[in-house]
Image (cartoon, rainbow, N blue to C red; front, top):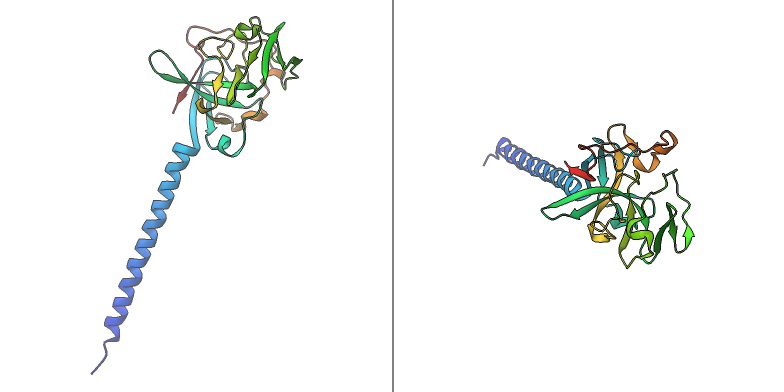
Length: 213
């Protein structure tokens, strides 16, 4: 009986082709899943709406937010974060700077921040606050609570305001990581060395919000 080597070779070739197709499909699915996971659970872009974080971030700036950061590292003082706020009609997002950490006492005296009774030495030349709001009296932060301030401290809403108050850790979406307009790490931005006066808000940009892309 004559053995058909060509038939056997064709069978092996088909098996190899099917195997390669399956491997390729699996690789494509892995890439698609990874991209989906990174987009929805790892990184996300937001657009700053308003001047409340000026001069660090300006109205219209696009920022890349690292949503995994605080699952790996703890939230630190001076981190710029995205906060999900609950309004009377819908949820919205704001960009804020973390000032007070869980277990601390925060107070604003003569326009400056005090933590546990000691004046906070801040990283930037923030303007003196004209109104201490809720923090004119000592504010005690509970576990997983944070006190946040906007950088444009006389023209924005933050933990000094009753409608914002202390921020629960579960409402912090992630760390504002990169300003996409100029591809700069937000932690390295220091607009205060260039601008000594905070811009005044107008009707279109005074709202403290960040738009999800």
